[in-house]
Length: 472
Image (cartoon, rainbow, N blue to C red; front, side, top):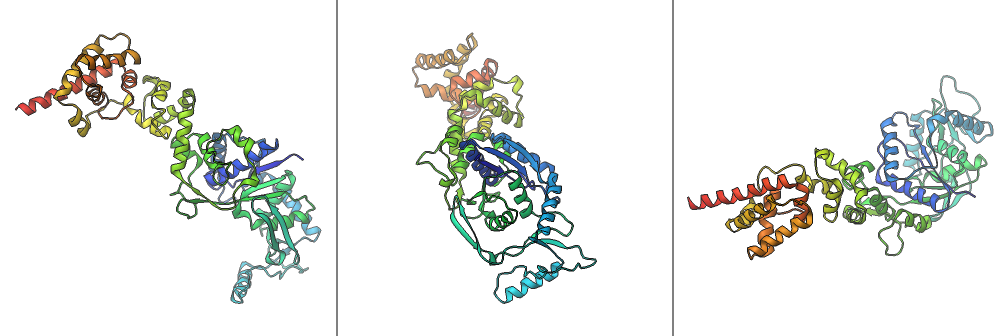
């Protein structure tokens, strides 16, 4: 048997982290078993489905690298097939026309609630044979009235639901359009799905879908219902916790490999191992090892994982996404320093590529004024002589690369018999306008000779003006 899994989102919004994790688990299980992963777009909700949402799903899947083996299939392309199955079920007596109005059905449920019964359709039209003129009926599935649906959930173990708990659900609306529980069953049968991996919000649909599959004589696939993701405060995941579009994580400077690594650990583990390559995920993952309890989304943990991936990446891998971040911040990357050199300089200093880009703005935009606190502390009279000597040495330096630049700083400190910090900090503030920058040799190299000489002169003039003010 070839394992076949699927990811079947509804295009009524963006691809969020919960959907991405479901897609990841389905993708991993197919890859681990040399099976096939199918992408299906469940777009029968015509009012809420949008082309933009479809594209957001495609973009998110592509960015994460969760490529499908078949599809994408669109349910709206399969309406003739659904109508064929609905008619088949009517013909074989497993479905019937229901002429009850919405008001009648609600009255049934109100009466049941008053009697402390589970609200459900009471089967009023189940045995009706006559047509009600002028009324467009819905079609209901004739659910078994006795027995139970028993299935072995790969995450939760055996689940048993009595058929008397299930009502005769609608499989076609009064306008003839099929409903979710019918379309998903037909698709899963026609597409030969062997394993249905989805969120546990679908668990109540499963016994109903199994009964429809049984009525159609289909082989029942295996089901795995993965727990929901909660915020770190225990509440259902929302935008304030991080339930945003997957593509927002890209825009915020996360690497797709890091997000996948984080998502796979939300509800699954392999000993104490925290970081997994894609190949390791495929090799080690098993849906049966997924926890039954809900997992909490922790942004700090995601940031830590992302930082590990940034630090361990080959610099060339980060050039393209960092370039995008710099452009988003308005940097002229065509006329700036080498992006790969920026990566090498900043790789150990940033949790996200967006943070890396923000810390690199100094290499594209010269500062307008000094940070007041940094200048008052470091641009004092004692810093004047080191800066003037550095300026003299840098002006005649022909090889503007890191090693000779570093040597100039060391030689200046030795010549003036000063500790390195007494030379380095006035220089750092002069170059960057603040007391924070990458290593000085890298900062000098990336800024370029012309900018460095200009900024050192700024520092010298600041000190001289300060001295004059103190003397006046």
